[in-house]
Length: 248
Image (cartoon, rainbow, N blue to C red; front, side, top):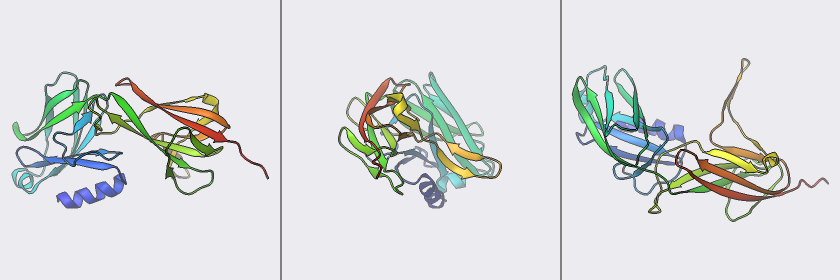
């Protein structure tokens, strides 16, 4: 069951990285996705981002399947509980996932309880970023693909699209696992327009997502894009030099 569930998850998420560990009682695999690569594959011991909801997918091990019933109505809690929000989402026979938000860095024991008894538990480490790294991707006007950009300022053409992967870094210089939606501002504001991601177009409506963050450059000149994690008070700037459209 674990392998069958994990493969569709990876395909759905595309890329990034998965951090996974089995609970102390050996009944649940806990898996966290990040949009960027994280050092190591184990969830236990990997710092997880504070201040934002983090979805952790749950998957029963063989031992967990033997120990559970068909309803699997798990109740989740965290210790210490101060400054922690935790909710579970499950369907019949499937443990689903938990969404956990932690405000204060530190270790937290997450317990999954079934019928009044601890079904499994895991100790998770949460940390706050000291800085942000930003990975910019650029799609030239009318191009099909994005390419990774480097340097500063980044040279782009008017009409290009830029998308960003913000990577939280802790005080020790390590990447912090987990995902969040960054704030985004531009200087000057009138030099860009925000992008939206079209997920589906139908006769009744258009379905869009405003995350991940992207912009289109509509005016030539110097442009600074600021990505921010407002909950943790850190930000990073990416600088661009936008070349004007050349009319033949």
